[in-house]
Image (cartoon, rainbow, N blue to C red):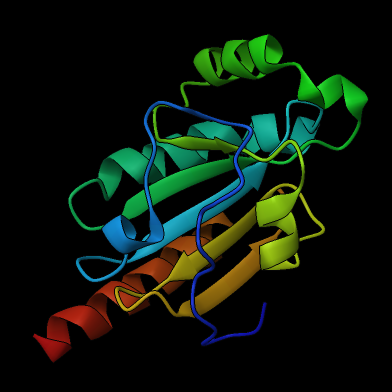
Length: 151
């Protein structure tokens, strides 16, 4: 995805965990962070406490949605995904992307990967890899600051 492109529809999930959301529900009110992860990704698990802290810190200002992107057949076991989500405190909605439908819509090749959309649903920041939470926080704060100026 390129910057300023609109958020794809959140369709094609094999299953949703922790509740389901639509693009319409996310766009309009506040910015959204969509993060891709996988149960076989060590970096994802290392970054998850920071993602969760981020989610809790910004809960009133930011939507957070997780996308589970399988990297092999072993990543398709829904019970293992549920177990990992519970172990790592992932309480936000999880789009289980067993068929890579959303992965393809995002043209995403990485886990972990983070996409920040402004309240109008336009992509404002993308980053991949386990480090860089400070950069992610800066970008989210920039989008939030722009939103407050516009009001």
